[in-house]
Length: 119
Image (cartoon, rainbow, N blue to C red; front, side, top):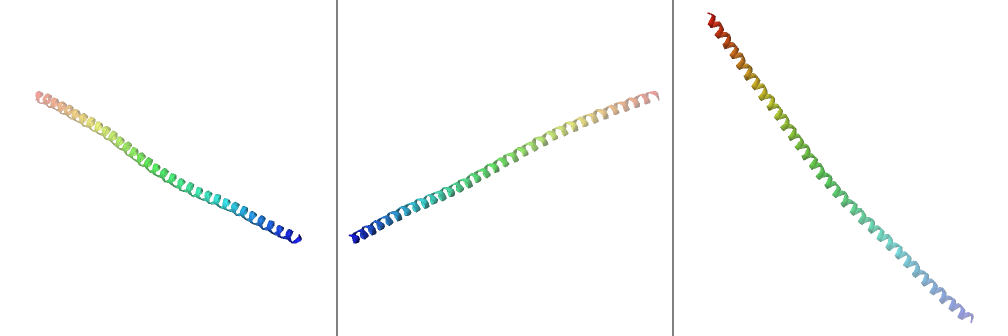
């Protein structure tokens, strides 16, 4: 009987040992699986962030190009305005010079006529 108890105890210890080993293996597999899943998720998040950063950089480049074009347009408008104002003042100056020259010529002719008339 003692021998049977030893066998039963040995079998029970063996069964419990196998059971515990299986539970530990499952726990470790589950843990490593969740760690693998977390690592995989983290890698995917890193890839997503990198793609998002790339899209953001592309959007910034587009915005910079648009701003550059807008600044170019402002410069063009400003140059057109400056040119328009310069042309206006040039025409005004030329007109005043022409009027002035005609006035001086008329005045000079008038003086000559008066001077020749007296002689």
